[in-house]
Length: 323
Ligand code: 0X9
Ligand code: CA
Ligand code: CA
Ligand code: CA
Ligand code: ZN
Image: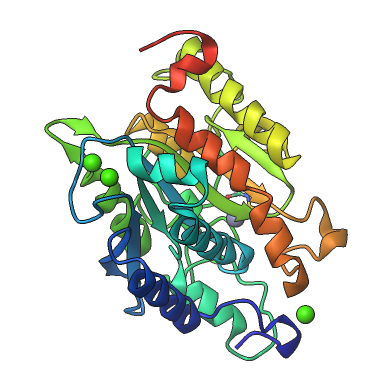
C-alpha cells in the first residue's frame, strides 16, 4: 500500500472501486470496458464518457492515457480527477456539458498496473519505472514509453540493455500493456477513419507540455508537416498558458524513440501531447509529491484538457486553417 502519509493516493483496487462508483452514479454518461490484461493479469480498462454513452456517435474522440511509468502515481489521480469532474460537472458546468454532448472521451487510467502495484507493495516507494515483465538474463521490466511501434529503437533514444531504465524491449509492442493500448487505439478506426483526433499521455514530473516528434530534433519530418507542427505548437502553447507549464517539442527535453506520442501521431495521425505534471523540480517531491497536492495539481489541468476537447473537431483552426 501507499505509505500512510500518502493514503489519499489510490491503489489499483481503490482506483477500480472509484471508477465503478462513478459509473454507478452516472450510468448514462460513463461506461468502461476491459481492453486487455497486463503481464501479471491485471485488467487494463478504457473508460468512456459522453452523452448517450452506449452509442458510438459520430463525434470527435479524445484519448487520455495515464501511468505508463510505475512511480508516476499522480497521473492516476489525474485520471480520477477527470472522471469526477466530467461525471459530476455534466449538467451544471457549461463547458463540461458541451464537451460531453459533442465529444467522446476515452480515459485509460492505468496503462501499467503491475509496475504501479510493485512500486508500493512494501509500503516504501521503490522508484520503479518499468512494467514487470521478465527479460532474458534476469532483469525485470520494459520501459513502456520506449516500446511503441513507430521508429522503435531508431535513434539512440532508448536502450537495448535489459536492466536499463529506458529498456525498449526485444521488439516493438513486446510488452502486453503496449499492445493492449495500441490495439484499442487501432480499434477506433471506423470505416477507414481514426475516430480519435487528439490525446494527452500524462507523466510526472517537470511541468511540461510536449509535442512530437521525440525521435528527432527537427521541427518537421516525414509525416509531420509545418502545419501539423504549428497546430501542435499553437494548442500546446495555449494549454501551457493555462496550467503554467513550459511548452516545447519533446526532443527539446531529450531524444526518445518508441514513445507513445510519436506513435499516436506518426502511425495514427492523432494530435498528441505528453504532459509532465507537478513538481517542476525534485524539490517538490520528485516522483512522490505528498498527497496534500493532489487536488491542486490535478485541477490545474482542467482548463488545458477542456481546450484540447474544444479544439478536437478541427485542430488546424488554431493556425487559421480549416481542414
Ligand atoms: O522519458 C519519458 O518517457 C518521459 N519523461 S519521464 O520522466 N516521465 O519518464 C517524456 C516523454 C516525452 N515524450 C517524448 N520524448 N517523445
Ligand atoms: Ca499526507
Ligand atoms: Ca455522445
Ligand atoms: Ca464515435
Ligand atoms: Zn513518465
